[in-house]
Image 1 (tube, rainbow, N blue to C red):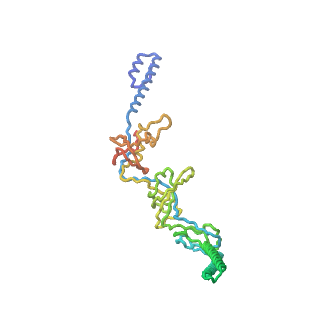
Image 2 (spheres, rainbow, N blue to C red):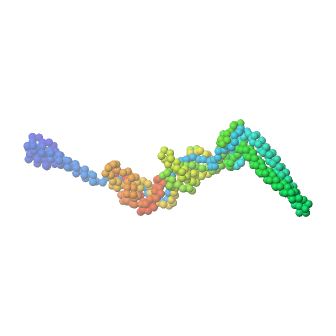
Image 3 (cartoon, one colour):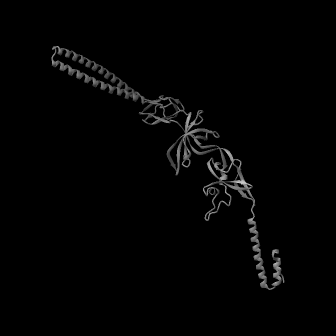
Length: 409
């Protein structure tokens, strides 16, 4: 009779069962027993392998000490300061244009003129009327003086009984009439003077003048063109040696932005070059677009070499905070947690490293000591996105922190 081959680990048990149980039923009992023994052996081996610690490779970085600059980014455009759009205050045909693109201008300089034939004629008429009224005032002034002298003589004569009281009354009335007439003439003089001013203003409105010292940015007018009142045809701005950058600050960053902060920015026209400015003001009025809330910040930009032009798109970096000579740890060290620290929740996926870093509301780093990570609780401050300031905690420059770990198989 033949027997089945069984594993060597149970050879003695198999031999005993084979000699003591030649019956077929006993043979099946032998096979079941061997199967149970084999399963138990495999489980024991796996258990021992599981309890054996596999080697771990750590990715590390040192703690440093130095300066840290915290920044935010914003985008916007350059614009000229004191931008003014100039239009005619009266309708008329253009007879002269003396301004062109990029031309420097001074305050009060005539940039264009309209046909002034009718306003100038009205001015001459008003001046003539003014002259006539002035002459009338002079005539009535003389009349008033004459009646006053006559009244004085009549009073002397009445005192010496050489004139009647009726004559005195007549002279008093003449004086009153003369003074009233003079007052009316003087009032008419004021009306005439006002008419001259209006006529001169009408003539002056035919001339488009620069309201400030600056430069002409745009010109949309030609000789012979018919202009309507209040139609902008010229754009003048302050000198382009200083510009403004208007950038949009996200609502999440607006609490860190204030006037006086330094700003660096780039423009597509000058790749690789860095320009600087100072944040002058932050507007309180919010702008909402596609459910995104932003606030406008105005940056004053020096432009002595005139390389920058209004309308250029800028990508700005605002320095919101600067810390000198502080302890710095890599942000990856704050995110790292050993596997046994990151507990898997009862439901849902396990938390990632960033979530695990703030599970209990505390910041931690793991210093590598004797080949193993040691937890250190720290209080953190500002960050630049790569490194973070440590304000309190048992870490110092030169300490080696764990950034990541990999189990070697």
